[in-house]
Length: 110
Length: 113
Image 1: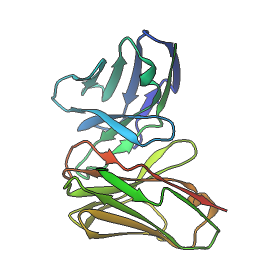
Image 2: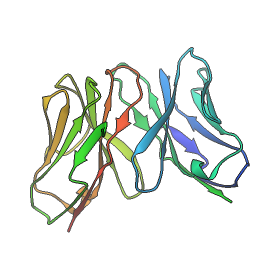
Image 3: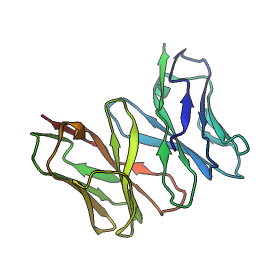
Image 4: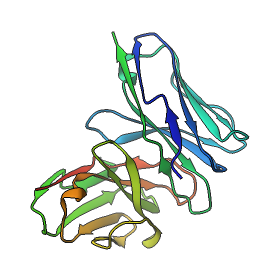
């Protein structure tokens, strides 16, 4: 089942912070975050495992609330290079299938 | 060296034709995938192979047939192309079938006219 991401889009000025949320109605084993720039392939950011720690990638961090089946991606002091579409992907069962949300379009302006 | 490569990058063809997309990874990974990304950017898994064995076969028309001649290659053949097949097709690989990051190829933009 597809995870739900919010917001669908966000516009920031350079240096501002943003939070992107991802939730699932099913029990999750892991949450994956990817960023896709326009015309390019998705690029892996981080994985959060059930029972695991909060992860970081540069100034981007993420958390995973296993009880609520929710993950949040925190972008701190955003840079122009952060612009792109952020996808969360979830793995819920033993089939190892990664199901992506619809994405959040992040635009960082100077 | 490109980690995951796909050919061709662009494919324009007419309805009813048959076409193939090739994918190769030089990362030594065991698992490979095909994803379809539609015009609304929805990224959906189609197939996955682990050591040449088909693991995930989503609800995809049987006009789509993947083939993995070895664990470094995963090709996608599409018969009788339809307008709705127009999309960007991404190949990806990961070290194993279990939870690991996936490395995506550059994508193949398929346009069916």
